[in-house]
Image (cartoon, rainbow, N blue to C red):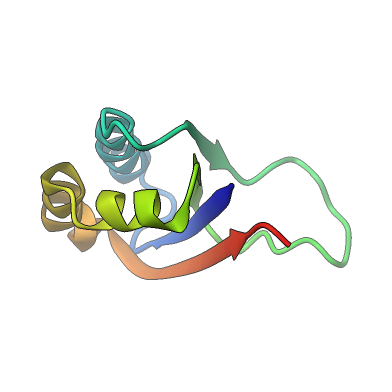
Length: 100
């Protein structure tokens, strides 16, 4: 299993319209056939010193293999998402992991 976890930091984190536009864009990515599981999340209502609450939206995807994730990265739907939504975020942090 290959895990791709993206954290988006919105330019306007208090804008529900920007958040909704990003979520709508992320939802289009679930149509890519190699995505096995996808989850769109917001910062949870948890408060411990080890929890990073600085991001706006998280996007978690599971793929069978890294090769499937590579297909996703080069898919036209993914390119359209980036083109249409990149103006919404100031920063993106990505954590990829593979099976041990």
